[in-house]
Length: 472
Image (tube, rainbow, N blue to C red; front, side, top):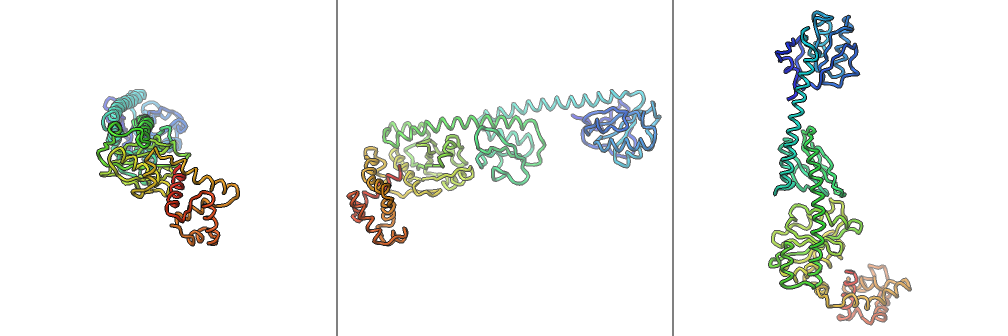
């Protein structure tokens, strides 16, 4: 335990005598400075006990100046050795000490200054040794908590107990463990914020509620958290790659029936229960983040895989988390994201159906897109035997070639016509064209493709071709 001035003056072996009216401060003594200089300030760092015999303090002015200078430097007290130059503490020095509130005490002639220094040094050494022991115990406790079933949450709980205050961990703009405290990765209010390096652009922050005094165990906690989050990111990449390959096999129809159900069960998907599929797509420059991005609270029960550089989530239908909340989380993580949501179905074929619903829903381009049920396009997409790409190319390539060669807009006009349920007037208004211009373009579509969008069967064919083209 560090020693205070009160402790020092109470040591009977030293026989120090308090003088004056100033009270001893409660803060620990950091060192003992022995000086005979008239101005000790250049050699003081603060919180020292200054010892002197006053060899150079022969006048009242010099004595008062010495006290003021020691006080300015942050000294805790002045110890005056009597019996050598002065028989007692000079009255001017003691009066000035009382004026500035600096405690003073006399040191008997037979007590060497080194004895006082050794007493303080021994106390500091014992305090630092005890602190080192506490730090080592803290290291062991934090490491054990992290390696136990509680993981990061248990580590932060132990750290909060050690610090006596709340602790929270934020990554990608969301709290991932610890106290509920601040609401964002940039915690407001009385929170001390420490960055945690993970090698990712995840804005990871360890937030500690005030009052907080710097503790060495926090540095160790930061290192443990950094290693753990890096390992978690590496594990997520491997798991999502493996699950993505499995989902891709199911979606393509190369894995089906009992074998598909068994392998999906190994990935945490019980196909006897209803599941929905969510597809998360982000800007092309941000897709790398989907490999390691942790899921927010409530999404732990969802299996996750990477298919076509998109994150595919398969949560159970019962108690399913809110996709809108996932969207807010992605936005907070700095990702330009779109989410497509498929329906909830059981069995491996149900996952295929839900996947294509979600994939088609993505084409709407909103941040959150919920699929229409029983979509004819989704139905066709679930069949790997249907040559959809060839169908779309054969049908639409003449229009694309004509538009490219002549600078026309037959394809956009056809898309608008089908989207507006065959209304020439609506298309003309939307594109700022004369109705006869729209009719002329539609006639060119018939001439180039052989399909008439005014005929129901042909309209369906053209619609499917356009949808398949949009889905890639």
